[in-house]
Amino acid sequence: MNSNILTLLNAEGLDIDLKNIAQKIVNNIRISDDEAILLYEKGELGFLGVLANFIREQKHGNKTYFNKNFHIEPTNICIYNCKFCSYVRKIGQEGAWEFTIDEILKTVESYKNTGVTEVHIVGGVHPKRDLHYYGEMMQKIKEIIPNIHIKAFTAVELEYMIKKAKLSLEDGLLKLKEYGLDSIPGGGAEIFHSDIRKEICDEKASTDMWLTIHETAHKVGIPSNATILYGHVEKYEHRVHHMSKLRELQDKTGGFNTYIPLKFRKENNSMSHIGEVTSIEDLKNFAVSRIYLDNFPHLKAYWPSIGKEIAQLSLSFGVDDIDGTIDDSTKIYSMAGAEDQNPKMTTNDLVKLVKDVKRIPIERDTLYNVINTF
Image (cartoon, rainbow, N blue to C red; front, side, top):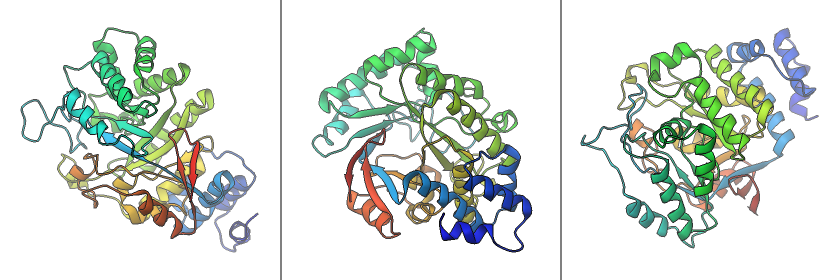
């Protein structure tokens, strides 16, 4: 047992309930929802960091993962109007885009022979594009870079494109897999609690639908990630409710690779008046997430969301993955006012970021197979 944990357990004046939670963590005993809420409410940042880092090092030692990836955002035209979204446009509206498949393939061509292992494809829910349209796109991407892993389409996009193609959910996912889909990202989860979901994104796929899509994907051999959108109108109990749904499904399927807390950014959306939570709250949220989600192998800090410096600090608060190079190929967070308006890091940048805090950079593929150690 490391010295930080021993010091924590022997600290005088520590709240007895917090000490009991710490003992559970050391003994690899799952914490309850009420205990997770208590950690949010009473746990000081240093206390949470020691516990989360203990778990992180039990699972991964000093290893910190990243990959060489780029994003494709085929369109920001969307049938929905989520209040937190700074990205959405309607057909013909200023700032809207809808790239053709040929335009997308030109982007893919530019990454040929560069060592990228993943393309991440998400965008708006376009009213005129179905599963077969995106299936053709994926087939042609793999003609250009045959070994690339395609991680694509949020549950919200999948629900619409499969329904538009008049297929069942399982048949639709199997068809997408046949077209070349390798895994799905975790977007569209936002907050699962019905009260909050009704307030911020009432139109889009329901909590039950999001969970059903991911469960079905796992069933047909498509792994996925999971996210939360935090730092807006939700309370701590809503975050824990959200994670409880994910932990329950992961117990059932084991199909989630990583959990990615995504910070609400306030610019250019109808929730701008709410403001944003502090960096301290970001780190607290990472730590509690790592402590609670004991069956998730990885916890990711998506650096375009929180910035490079907080992503670096998060490696001491349970995080073991900092996403990838991205190469300035996403607009979702820059349009919402993130500090980094041109999200791009080279492999050398990522390696330095990790090494500067005495961690070991590991280049991975999407499924966490090791490609290179630095």
